[in-house]
Image (cartoon, rainbow, N blue to C red; front, side, top):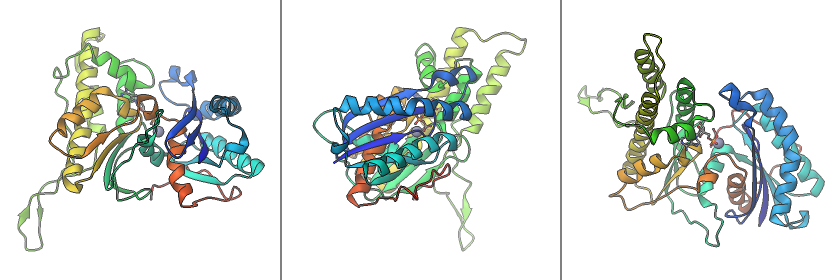
Length: 355
Ligand code: KG4
Ligand code: ZN
């Protein structure tokens, strides 16, 4: 089954054609560089750029896959969450194409797309996750631990109380004057830094011991939730302390801050993932989302899971950040259940919940 998928939830315009939820026949991503000079995504600019990019990106994806509309079995699109102006462009394009070419239409949640990026393959062997599984999804908008008993069954067992980990990467990059998106730039700069130079707080949301019904104090269960605002503030304080007399950070100081921040952020993620693995004893452990592209994060998780038997996987680097192929992968499992939506009824939802 060949699915043409569209993803426009943030600042990447993307169209892909994916066969059987795994094989990428084409995947075109047009990244909007217009936002770099503002240090973050400007919603109005993003929406306008999607309108300009969507048709050329669509044509390129069809040409690259060497298919015609007759070969396409269904159309999939990100319904949400995301920026409303951006989502509208993808959803309206998908609705129009579905009506025009009389194809079934599938609505996909952005996070489920990130999870299913793990099933994508450019080769001939499809990935087979074993259920139950635990997936850590870390992007610019979300930091979630998700437990899945089977395909499309999601239980969020850990989430952030404030900033997402990718957002923290972007904000710290801004404090260091590095540019946007911050994650890859912090990662590059960290190579020249000492990760132990500044011991930033390893924020742990495990609460104080609680009293049971009989009044006895019981140890609190380890929390699977995250918080990144405290870490971000600690970095800001350190920068202020180092630049008290209006001095500028030198390159070594910047690299040490980047490396120490990256190490701490990743350690919090890896530690909570390990806790979830200990609690749920999954057969597969997945990592996904833009921050999953971070090599050190993969290494830190691997070293924590060394003694576990479950298989740990993560998508290819270019499938970690936003792309339409991941939407096509998730859509395949909806199509198997004939989970289609009437084009007249599909609306974008910036706060779409994963259920
Ligand atoms: O999944 P994604 O492309 O978009 C959202 O759904 O948010 O994730 C983007 C986020 C950004 O915050 C970006 O800084 C981060 O992923 N990111 C990285 C790396 N590559 C992208 N963070 C750390 N290390 C990387 N190599
Ligand atoms: Zn994303």
